[in-house]
Amino acid sequence: MPEEHQIFLRLAVALAIGLLIGVERGWHERDAAEGSRVAGVRTYALIGLLGGAAGLVAGLTSALVLGLVFVGVAVALTAAYLLGQNREHDVGITSLVAGLLTFVLGALAALGELAPSAAAAVITTLLLGYKPLIHRWIGALDRKDLKAGLTLLLISVVLLPVLPNQGFGPWGALNPYEIWWMVVLIAAISFAGYYAIQLAGARRGTLFTGLFGGLASSTALTLHFSRLARRQPAMTPMLATGILVACGTMFPRMLLVSTLINPALMPRLLWPAAVMALVAYGFAALYWRTQSPGGNEAAASLESPLELKSAMSFGALLALVMLLARGLKTWLGDGGVLLLAAASGIADVDAITLALARMGQDELPLGLAATSIVIAAAVNSLVKGIIATAVGGRALGLRVGLPLLGAGIAGLSAVWWTLP
Image (cartoon, rainbow, N blue to C red; front, side, top):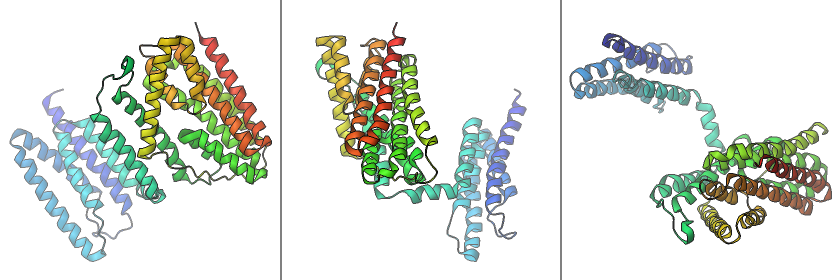
């Protein structure tokens, strides 16, 4: 492309950035009296174009030009903001910051970074436009939720990068970086499901709660709903629906976690996970259709899945499972791995899933890894059926246990069918 055309394109993008942000700001302040706004659509467009022109001039002369122009724009916008504040007593500086950012993005576009500047402009517009939604999200947080989010940042941004990325211990089975990365993965998925429940409210229905509860902890939700069924027997059919939705969600979660670690497992696990989820969801849909309207609200007061202590405990469990898997594979061969999968599924699916997915990269045949993961999921499903029966009573146990038993058998049959 000729140089003149590149200049015109860059200025056009700078102008478009200003127009995009200006339209959002103009719509947001559409009810304000004429002349009372810090900047309108035209002003933002001109700020973006000014940033583009200043960026071009700086590229031809000195970066000092861009800095001086930015200071001038900042002084002008700040003066306009202070005058408006005196009239309206509004201490918000969003429009001021948006104006300065428009200038910077316009200059970035003029310097040739078209895609990053345009993407940043779109993100800026979304942040500006979704103010009520963002405030609602913040309002849904309490102290323990904020602490959980900060814990997630601590274990991912702070701790993960400093861990050594090499094997230690017997057979070199313990890689601190890989183990902790898998802890972060599970913590992030669990937190997403937990926070989704917090945002929408635990009383939005058993279907929604079951869906996202399956991401956070299907076992915890099964226990909670079983206790609720014991206290309120009339809600048993709907609570069984929620439990099956949560347990059905565990199977796509299992597929997601394992293929993120080892994408080669996708073909091996896709059909077993799909069949198991279909059985659980199918019975949930059947129960849902046979229920009368009303009475379908159930609170799921799940505990926050992110505490530093729980993350450390899961990391220790994962390290133990990885060490046992490597040892049993060495001592007992394939049978030892299958035995460990069945035993691990009694308590937790995530740890054995992550361990086997990692070993399937270079130590275990993919078929054995996939079979072991499905065995763990089937055993875990059976355990949740037993929990529902023991805690929630026979009526809940029949509605939950039989479908989960069927899902386990279907998954094992599917994984056997896919073996070469």
